[in-house]
Image (cartoon, rainbow, N blue to C red; front, side):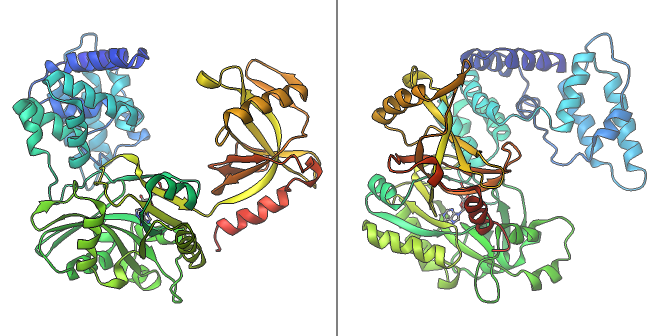
Length: 513
Ligand code: AMP
């Protein structure tokens, strides 16, 4: 296939906002591909390259610029070979040789093709959202069930491979997309819960675990071979020999285990996330780093053992088998309970030991690779602040006609007035929406199409999980996961929380801890 056809499809996919039309456009294109082209095209259309490291930067690309060709003649196969060739160039004069090879490629490309290649090579076309659409398009093009294609993509962690198998064998190709050793599975993700109470209300009896703030690893082991993958599925084996050793020490045969890796201080407290992450930097003096920041893995899941995938097994069974394998020191601290006060105590213990919070997992749930669902809920320390409403935005959909998204401010005792810390429309009941719309309209100072600015009078109790640095707001701070707990009719703006209090809390979050 001509690169021009792919570029044209890419343009049309970007231009339409209709999901079904995007899927149709992609499916039509996919049907026309040769077996040798499908992987590259699926990658390109999501903005990715098949070669992981090309070593091409902006400067090299700019130097490789060439006058555009008049006629589109470049085939996908040729583009792919050129990119492979460039990626393989190393050693003396590498940048010059890369540039020359790229220049030859660019000289064969028309203007739109050059623009596309430029964006592709710089990673500027990368679009996570397109991968979901691409999975649907693959299903449509090759007559497969979309849910099976999505699952295959999550299990193999590689949509291009799924595409090749579909192209080669049709829907039957998906049978070869199960869990495989040394091919990382997309990690299961967690939703945020407001607190212990709501998590247990959702899950009933839950498997609770400490939530450690380190680096997630997925470890594959077969015989003496061990590979460690990061959350983004990159191979980080070389950076983490302790993890490799701990994995080798597990009894049994072939395994895939998952865990969080953390650097602990001599006193056994967790180092802040940023410090642990130094172990994953580039060009490390590994031995020295290992001395300074030794890593400890804490396993929390078992995805493969005894020659079979455990993904569809309930969490309870996966964790039980994991506990049988792992030394206690490397197992995530855990507890099964449906009792609120026991869970609240467990959360306090996790926080007191310097951790981020706890996870509450549904004991009966399978491992939903790549999915963020209700089966894993994260509960972090929740703080509340009494903040003043500065403005509110009109709602959409079901909330149309109501003032919904609230602008929240803390009292600025230095400069006077209030410093905005974020917005939230979460936690509001229908009654609260109706009430606040009425009240805020009475306090209106000015408005545009979206927002009503109000006299700073109403005080609300706002729960949140984190404070982060944010250039967006004048105080440089923003609340994360803010939600309204209730209106504080008993409080006046003069007694609302101050920016100093927020700053003090923020200092508590960031290193030095
Ligand atoms: P978040 O990154 O806030 O969405 O939280 C999910 C992440 O928490 C996972 O990707 C893991 O890296 C990390 N984590 C820490 N402890 C656990 C645990 N016990 N179970 C699962 N994930 C955990």
